[in-house]
Figure 1 (cartoon, rainbow, N blue to C red):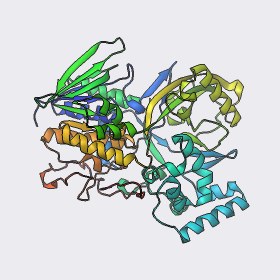
Figure 2 (figure 1 turned 90 degrees about the vertical axis):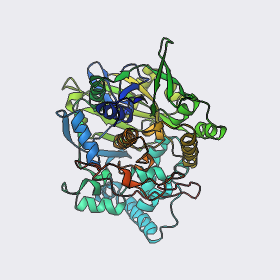
Figure 3 (figure 1 turned 45 degrees about the vertical axis):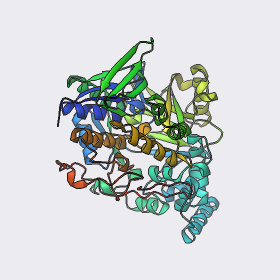
Figure 4 (figure 1 turned 90 degrees about the horizontal axis):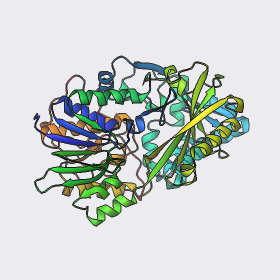
Amino acid sequence: MSSDQTVICIGAGPAGLTAGYLLGKAGVAVTVLEADPVYVGGISRTATWKGFSFDIGGHRFFSKSQEVEALWDELLPHDFLERPRKSRIFYSGKLFDYPLRAFDALSKLGIVEAARCVLSYARVRLNPGPAPANFEEWVTQRFGTRLFQIFFRTYTEKVWGMKCTEISADWAAQRIKGLSLTTAIWHALLPQKSDVPRDQMVKTLIDSFRYPRKGPGMLWDAAAARIRDQGGKVLMGQHVSSVERLADGRWQVTSTTADGSELVRNADHVISTMPMRELARALQPPVPSAVARAAEALRYRDFLVVALIIKDRDLFDDNWIYIHDPDVKVGRIQNFKSWSPEMVPDAALNCYGMEYFCFEGDGVWAADDAELVTMASAELVKLGLADAADIVEGTVVRQPKAYPVYDADYQDHVDVMRSGLDAQYPGLHLIGRNGMHKYNNQDHAMMTAMLTVRNILAGEQLYDVWQVNQDAEYHEDGAAGTQQAIDPSKRPALTGGELAALASERRVPVSPAIAVPGE
């Protein structure tokens, strides 16, 4: 372990701050560059407005990785709450439990519709068909056609802005892993026991989770403070414009601020969490044409939240509600007081987050804040979840590139980028959600950072971070795309229960049009 190395981390989200903290802890000089002028945490930040705190999407703190859980406790030892997990689906004027509980769903659908759902499920179980090639086929094989149409299609197509047949089965495998109608029925009869080992739990079925009392941004503010206390730098408002590999093998990163001033810094390593498409545009020497084409083909879905302050009538206590109603644009509604009472400064009020999924520049994204507050207020009333007289005021927060899109060709594009960058840019490390174009949670992002730090400290690639799956589990099957298998005998021993839960391999449905070697 050497303390004369220097590292630049691009992005102060969960991955970048985890890397920065662990590198600083090991004595490495680290600088974190964040584009946002105010908040760290990326999509896991907590925004504040007039004393109210709200997430950019909800973030439950639960991981199958004991190491990730331990790092959360290390960074924020006294400020976690244990919160009940509750989310439901709004469909046809009724609220259905989610994860789906068969008896709840079938009783609320009525006898005729319930019979259609049961027959539809029986049909796919008796004749499941070939391996699923897209999201619709993946879900249908586990729940049947009718339940897919009722409880999955509308919301999913709102999130992605595309048909379910155009979405890779990979996304369903990652986001609904381990859940089927059979599992849901079994869970309704015999809920998961609290003493089940974390690595054997179905994350979709957990009944409680931890949560910082002031929101996830509280954790990432603490991480940034620790980095600075260790002598590192976290610089805000820095838009990275150039990432150049110099002739001597070191790196030079140029960033600009809102006033146009430039900051140029050199380092031995660069850790990037910026979107792969933007990274390819910034790299010098320029990336090969095949890599540039692959990068430009990657797509992203954007997101905004309209935070409405309302008089609290205690109409629902869910953390969030999925809106499966094609007559409104809102996709999900957060209840921030249910996440933590400390998110709301006045007990007589509440804050609902009306979440809209969009593309940067489309009608929703481009609407002014007043229009969006008016639209969100009207939709909340239309759904029967508030009275117009109870809505006090609202504000809007936009999040570009919130979700990497899993279309039919995304994996091919990522593979081209991986091989091209590995060959030409040693010392460049991709981690995190957008850094790897993987729609995964913050524990996954953190684990990719943890293993990357170990590689840097060791001076060689001991771990292939592309083998970290949705559950922040590290696995190897002897291949990783075009990568060579890594000799595990060279790795340092993992102590203190590190990676104790990282033993299972994720099985991902493979579309005939998608090659996903090693996963």
